[in-house]
Image (cartoon, rainbow, N blue to C red):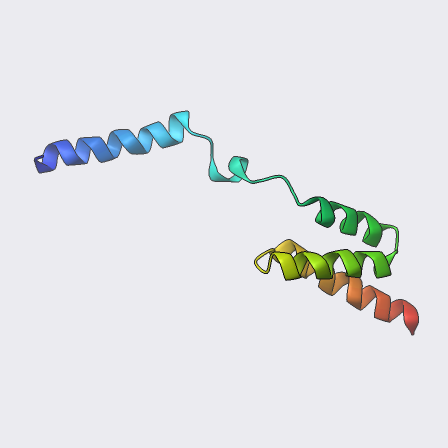
Length: 83
């Protein structure tokens, strides 16, 4: 394959991704059910439940940054309420 054809193939593939493919943000998975339940618990100030659910979630999925962020929030808010 010569350089010209290779360049054309790359350009066409790029256009196909941008015109016909879904953006990467639209491909995101649905949130974990435990994460949803934990957020709902935190929003109603039930931090014990939120911490329990989030702790189990980060043990199961150590790459879930949302779970870590909500766990930090729940632990901090629980400590603030206990003071």
